[in-house]
Length: 210
Image 1 (cartoon, rainbow, N blue to C red):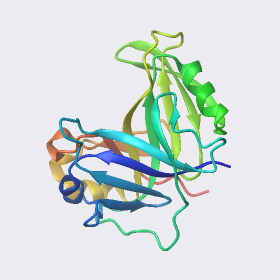
Image 2 (image 1 turned 120 degrees about the vertical axis):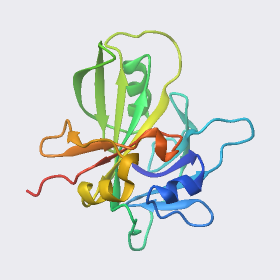
Image 3 (image 1 turned 60 degrees about the vertical axis):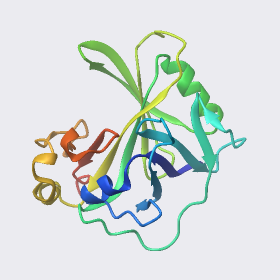
Image 4 (image 1 turned 30 degrees about the vertical axis):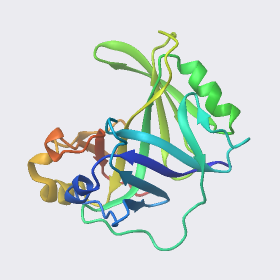
C-alpha cells in the first residue's frame, strides 16, 4: 500500500516557524506521518508545494500527472510537538483541468480513489475525488468535464490541530474565523495572507471521538 511520506514546500522557513510550526535549521518539519521540507524557492521561483514523496508506489514514477514525485521512507520516532498544536497533515489539495485523467494517473501508481462528490468553486460546478495513501488525504478538485490539457497542480495544505481555539489564540489576526468543515463535527479556519505563508494553509479541529 502506498503512503504519502514527504512534501517539498518552497517557502521561507522563518514564516512557518512564526506560524507555530516546529521547523529545524535545515527546513525539516515532521508533521505526524509526513515530513515537510521547507526551503526557499529556487532562484526566480515562486512559493509553492514543489513535490511529494511516497513509500510503496507501483513502478516508482517520477511524476503523477505532472506533479513531481519521489520515493521516501515512512518516518520513525516520536511525533514532533508544534507550538500551534498541529498533530498531522489532514489533506493535500490538488487541482486539475481533467479530473479523470489525473485520477487515472494516480490509480495507475497504486493510489485508490475512495469517493467522489460534487462541489463548486467561484460559482462553478466542480467535483472532488478523495484518496488516502496513509495518514493524509489527497483531495483532487476539477470540473465535471475536462476543461483543457493543462497539468494538475498542488493548491494547498490542511493540518489537524489538537485545539483550534488555542491555535486561533496563538495566531491572532493571522487566522481566519473558524467555520463548519465539510467533514461532520469538524471546524476549519484558513491562515490569512498576513501570516506570510506562500502556500494556502488551513487548520482543522480533530475528528470527533467515536
